[in-house]
Length: 400
Image 1 (cartoon, rainbow, N blue to C red):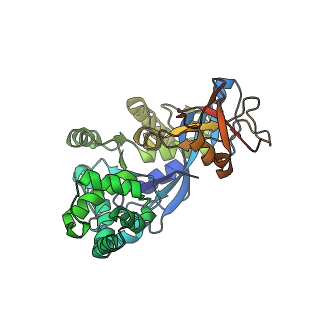
Image 2: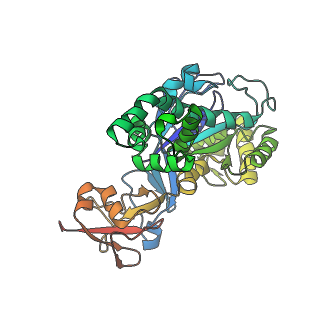
Image 3: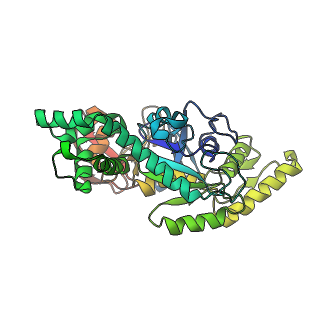
């Protein structure tokens, strides 16, 4: 699996409920801080219009699944313990939990939009906490986490860069390689920060500014405004959108999504994750309490068009990071050697080329690449041709 989403937030914001709703993995869920100690790792899915509909066939994915020509492509989701102010200094075991996010491509910050928990995750009643404080604190904590790692070794890094003439961007990339920092990313961040003096002259504030840019380039943060089913959340959401106009917010109810997925798992309802409605199949097995709960969720769906959980995952990959989904396929045969039709779907970064896609499939495909075929259009494309969302591509290499 090549794409990892990290779930972050303060304790009791609903991260573990969101995680379970997205993965149906068995995790501890409770309304008190630090229910999660070790990170939960599971498989979630993002929705993609399946290419099988274009060809009038039914696919057989090797990974993930397909429902009504909507392909659900697997992504790894990591749910770390709740973070509290001072996490970068180790408060609440923060350093341990932050390191669990090293390989994440994007972070989803789950915020309690109802304002029913304080900064430590302790219940205080809906409307008694301003969720804007949570938005500000968490982003700052993660930026400070980057900064603390750099600053603790900065003199050594700056001196080494000066003595070896390797360039400070190389030293930064090596120091933060676990966080997916590359020399290219480091160079870009240094330019954006406007740091032109000798690195040995850079101040702690300079390093903080640089670290914020490095974090934004490697761990962008999307915000899931959870608990929209609780009174008071709607007003808080309106205020948050006004206060942070450049931030991507997606309202959601992880608890509602979890209830729907569990009911669908037991074939009580028919529900496709992300849809705006569901259909009850086994009304007779439902108690009055369960019927009322489903009625409540049905009204929530009518108002919000979805529970927001699936939309958050989709937005993180496709709207936020602008990734595209590309299917390997053959001009004469869409099946693999085992008869699986369109068995794979790759999540590729924006501006991915046909040759880059060949390398993603297998290193040898990239090394021996000759050209590619756009299977939908039935035309030949070059290695530097940028691919589009939903493309079906056949790789032609020298080994054939």
